[in-house]
Every structure is written in C-alpha cells, then in structure tokens.
Length: 214
Image (tube, rainbow, N blue to C red):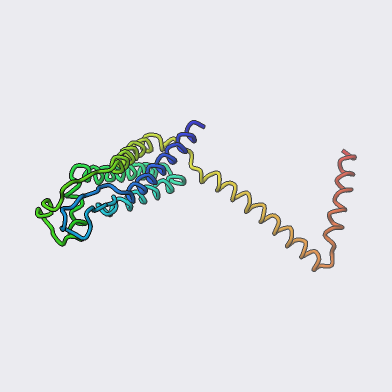
C-alpha cells in the first residue's frame, strides 16, 4: 500500500507540475514600455510562449511521460524518471533565462513591432516589468526535477498495474470461451436430434444415486 500511495502521489505531482508549466507559458511574463513613437503601441506585453516557444512542448512531454509511467515496467520507469527530471531542468533553464535578461528574451517580439533589431532596441525601451509567472514556472520545473529523481529512486518498488488488468482480462476471456464452448456443444446435440436440457436433467438423479450408494 505505501508503494501504491507513493506512485499515485508522484504521478499526480508530475501531472500538476506539467499543467502549471503549460498554464504559465500562456501568461504574461514581461511588459515593456516603449519610447513614444517607436511603435504603434506604447507597451509590449509578452507571454512565456512568445519568449520561448519550447516551453509548452516541454511541459506537454512531461504530461506524456506521466501517462506512460502508469503502465511502464521497472526499467522503463527509470528511463521516464530521468526524462521527467531533464525536461524539468529544461523548463527551469528557459524560465530563468527570461528572468535574467527579459529585454534580450523579448528581442524577437520587439523586432516584430518596431522593425529594429540588435543593440538599437535598448534605446526603444524606457521601462520593463517582469511578472510572477516566470518564477511560478521555475518552481514548477524545479519540482519536476525533484519528482523525476524520486521516480528513479522509488519506481523500482511499484507493482505493475498492468498485471491486474491482464489477469482480469484473462479470466474474462476464459469465461467467454467456456460459454461459447457450451453453446457449440448444445448446438451439436440439437443437430443430432438430442435435447441438451434432458441430458442436464438426467445428470442430476444419477449424481444423487451415486452419492446415496456411497
């Protein structure tokens, strides 16, 4: 039971961290105030995805890894645990890069609306403001790194959930096979002019007689 609980907790944590990173990527990360007349707008609002388009794919890949972990065998769990940790580290690196140099990270968007690139962009910016979303995404990525390491450590203790489903499926298939076999036997008896119901009723008294003789 403790192993199952830890598995559910880790998978839920990985999924939550990935979802948080996806949401964070769609939010406003940087707001730049432009010099008057530099562009058609006075302020440029930039989302995490605008700053680095790899954020969302990284987070979605983590979600896919969490899903695969639900049915993965022992060796594959270690591979997926390492993958989650690496993807989390990538999310941290991308997010922290924006925090370190927000104007440089937004240079592509600045060039789109001003047609100016390079160091000349710095003369167009009068103020810059970074929201809390990059920090939230950094925290989500760091949590994913930790959770990925925990999967590496604890994943070998998990029981493979697929075994339970496989055994259940096997029992169901066997029951269906027996039922189909009975139907075929009854049909053969009917084709031969015999009544299966009479055969079944005759078995009862014989068994009773056998038991009484004993």
